[in-house]
Image (cartoon, rainbow over all chains, first blue to last red; front, top):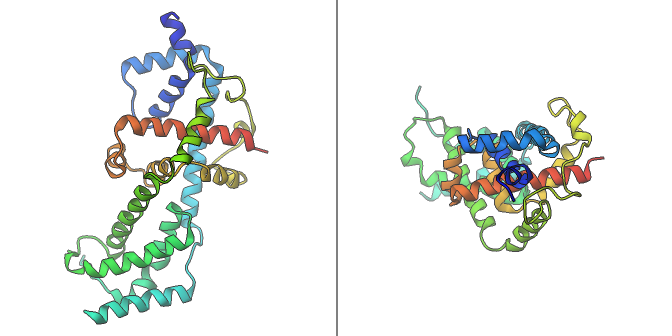
Amino acid sequence: MGLLSKITRNCNHATFLIEKKLIKPLSLRERIFLRIHLIGCDACRLYREQTIKISQMIKNLFNESVSASVTLDDEVKKEMQDRIEEKLNQN
Amino acid sequence: MSNELDPHHWVKAHADYLYAYTRARISDEELARDLVQDTFLSALEKVDAFEGRSSERTWLTAILRNKIIDQYRKKSSGINDAELKRAEDEQAEFFDADDGHWNQEPAPKHFGIDEYDPLHSKEFDHILMQCLKKLPALWMSVFTMKHLDEEPTDTICAELKLTASNYWVIIHRTKLNLRACLQKNWI
């Protein structure tokens, strides 16, 4: 396998670099690999678009679940405070 | 600004917040409740160490966060090897073993996500949640710390005891599996 086809065929490594690049800058060598690979690879270019969207979806989902009305029952809360008081009285 | 602790009002002031914080990171309701309760009780033991440099809520959240990470460590050690193996096997099918090229079936194809605006629709959140649930605990822990807490790589590696190269492998695999799961299940 020639050097070029090692780059153009290796979607496993290309997608790895796509993910890494979303978090930190790539080295020169990695940038060159990815750029050459993406020129000829429709599937990985599509992967890149989709994975960016998935990151956005994840972010929204997580932020929503934080702000969503996830609350505790009053009864559970009472029990929690009771245990705190109990412990405070022990000391 | 001086910050003081008032344990008599902790539950009223912070329990819902701490519970929502936990549930965003741990889906098990009962475990989440226990962690919040635990946080209050261990906080009581540490009141002397509180220096008033942060707010009461920030201080309690930091204690809770450590407990959540302990859970992550516990969940991702040992017992879930089978789960991890299954996810890894699944991924081995994505690429040709020799040259790393996409195999035909799992290769990215156009599907609903391409026309979908993730910022303005919540329609597909439930599919995403189903797909997230299938991830091995360790991957999910890394993923949560990364995307929810936006923790830097070094912090995640140190707290979950991962090498940097393990970390990148997990980030890659998680996204590959998630994307494949979405492509398969998108209506």
